[in-house]
Image 1 (cartoon, rainbow, N blue to C red):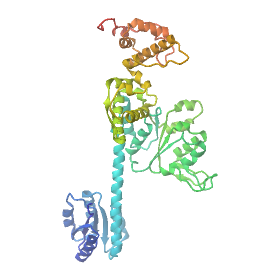
Image 2 (image 1 turned 30 degrees about the horizontal axis):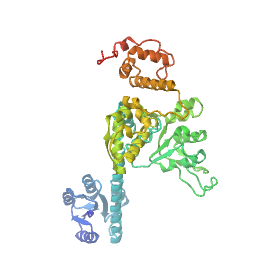
Image 3 (image 1 turned 45 degrees about the vertical axis):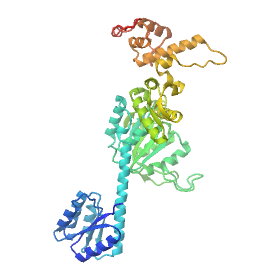
Image 4 (image 1 turned 90 degrees about the horizontal axis):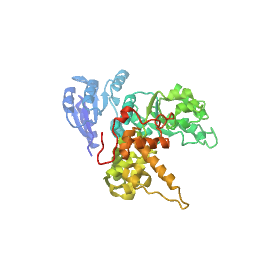
Length: 491
């Protein structure tokens, strides 16, 4: 382990020698100089300087000016200013310019050694904090949020733009889409990165306890309150609080949260003391808050306070091109953490997973990869490794799907009709309801497909007009090509 390097700059040779002996005995690497110019030469080196003891009045210059130069070369260096003519003004000036401490001569050598220990400990703590911040920033850098699709890149662009502000952010999206990861990315790329990030799930805590969790309570505020408790808002002072599932907040707590957002203050349960906090609020929900407002279940004024900067995180089915990237990421991660050796995934299996709708989003995908890693252990993931529900995403899987026949029998024609509906809908969804392209995928004549769509009453989601099943398609669609039986497809 490298010994801490200390520079002593003083024109009194006896003091320099005494300080050298004491610090050298402590195992420190000590260098000395009697003038400012000499000290500047000594500090021009690749070797880091941890601490400097600098006389305020040097023969060729001011000690505080020297300190400024030292910190330009060695930003982490701690500086203790020594002087035989101490004044309050000098001490204030020294600390304002970055001195760790100010000592007046003559001083007790034990006190100085204790101060040196404190300065070096402070430097070590600063370094550890900086390393932690760097690790957190590295962990939550934008490029570590996996995805190259346009929809997720738009989200990351928004995160990058809002991170530097203190504005309230409302993150919306289905469960499992990574809303908390987005919130952490905002925090750890903001000026508050070295302060606390405090998360609380408003839907996971009973409403009678949530107020105390958010705002704290004092001893005796209610039965069981045997001591004072600090709430999450106070813990997050100076940093960020993440309120997950904000749509589950009870009306009474909505009023109290609105006050915090408006006044940046609150009262703990059972207390009349007002606590001021400097907190950035990021909220998240998988519910439609505007719909809750219209139904009278969420305060309109609170909604607008939260919805200053809205960020909508897309569902995984809306960014299917990211599925291969996420699969590779989770396989690598789980191989490392679980000691497994998954080597890849077959093209057929990948097709299934890309076309699967992922109702549980990224969380479901990660859980599936972990399950496959545990059960398979090593090698390439094949289609038979997948649970049955994931195997319907490719034509091969669909044609070989296994259907369970109940003991009491089943309606064969209804089952076949349901399977046919499923195939047609998948082809239409995959082509954006372009019937020409869907017919090509299903190897059907376009007119046959259109007749089936009309007969079955299939329509795009949200279309109640019936306009998609009363004709044979637009001229533009008709010109895109028709599948004809035989070895070739005419265009």
